[in-house]
Length: 181
Image (cartoon, rainbow, N blue to C red; front, side):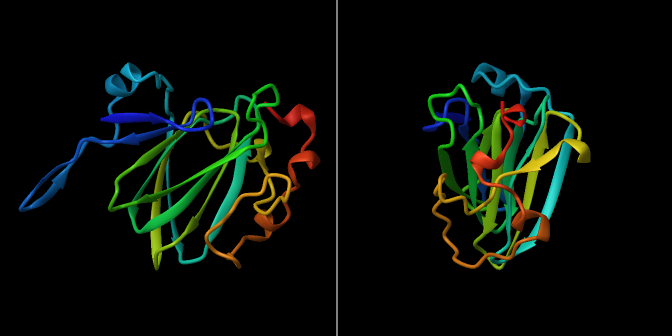
C-alpha cells in the first residue's frame, strides 16, 4: 500500500497493492496494521454502501462532534470525490480537494474528522463504500452548500441530481461557529 498526502492536512490518498492475474485481481481494502504504520489509527465502527446513478451529487455532509472520519472507495463505476476543510483553526480552512475515485483505479481516500464530504457520479452508476469512525446520528447531521461560491468547488457536472436536503445546506459562512471543528 502507498499513502500520499494531499493539499489538505490529514486527508490522504491510499493506493492498495493489487495482485492481478488471469482470473481477476486481489487486494486488501482494509488492513488496520498497515494503515497505522502510515499514521491512520482511526477506529472504524460502521460500514456504509450507497448506489447512485450518473449525475447524482451527494454532499457536502458532515456530523457534529465527535465528527466522523471516513475511509472511502468505489467498487463499481467512477465518482469525483470532494472534501472541504471545516477546521476553523486550520491554515486551509474553507479550502477543498477533489479526486477521481473509481473501481478501475482502486484508490481510497482517508478523510479525518473536521471535513465536509461529497461526491458526484461520473459513470452510468456507482457503488460507494465507506467506513466511518462514529455511528450515524441524525441529530448531528449537517451539511455545506455544494455550490457555495466562497468555497468554489469545481464540479465536473453542471446540473447534478440533488436531494432536497442537499439543496438546502448553508454556505460556509452560514454554518454556526459552534458547529465547525
